[in-house]
Image (cartoon, rainbow, N blue to C red; front, side, top):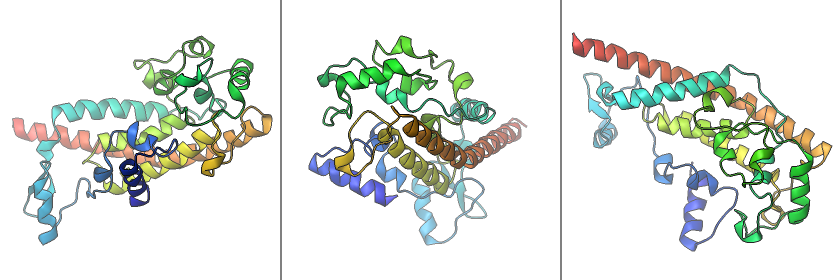
Length: 279
């Protein structure tokens, strides 16, 4: 993870911002030091002197086989969180990918916005304010992801064909959505330490790659940072976006399936542990 964590930490020490990569550490709450930290996940016993450092973590204990996750650390609160995340994961996986949103959520976030109010006001808009507003007004916005929709400007909200809320998230999430696939990273670390570090790392790497497409298809000019635009205001740009979106949906599917499996295993183990404790 250090190819991502170290540059971020160095930028912070210099007071610098990166409009693409900083999102991965500022919108998502896992600290860089925790992202770098290895963990085995469930069903693994660690042996040797190096393993003893895991006893400094509250979720690990000494067993006859070695040092392993403590089943008792999977609390009722963790179980509730896992059930909710499992609902999101399974409902998303049950749907066919929809690839016709074209990344207009980023455009809706600056629609009719003053220059001072633009989120990344250190960047210029490729088409200017007027041109950006014309794209929003000329294309249908189909964003079903609540955490993107909540950043829409007030004039942009009624233009969305959907009005997602936190409560409707399980019914609207779909596997073609860039943000739903980026959020696999958030789900993975919320399930920590009951998933292996390798799965968290894979979800983070997917989120990092998706973030680049997300911003390349945005209204911002990122050429000075080395990113060529995906001009979704054109038919060719929309086709390019949809192809990339479909590829990310294919990459996300096995990660989502892994997370679903770990959720079921954790909940099953939790139930068995409670039954044993009660008996």
